Image (cartoon, rainbow, N blue to C red; front, side, top):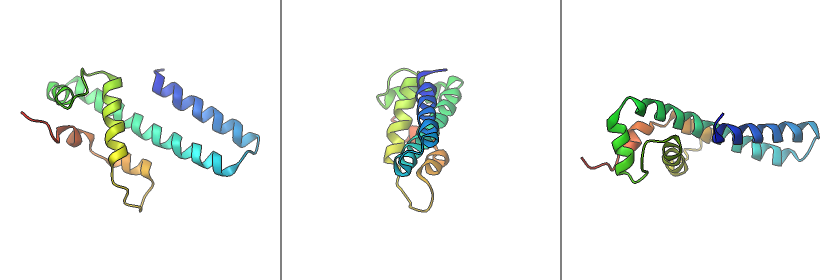
Length: 113
């Protein structure tokens, strides 16, 4: 389990405990949304990372974009930054928008070759 999975698991545990203790529903909903967003970002980051393991061009694009070597931390930082800049179309949950984003295409944007 890496640090991102541990953070998500810790948040999920906190949510479960809050639900069992019948704490503030608004706070629980906010934490649930946060967990969903972190899960979506993590899913995209790990998928991009795995794809880049076999694609030297993706690894180079990450470096050119200023994120450094091809590590999960650097790929996660890229995905996180792009995800926070995604437009909110208001029609679907933001986590769904993150899951539907094409981070390979986003990585190619702005790259100069």
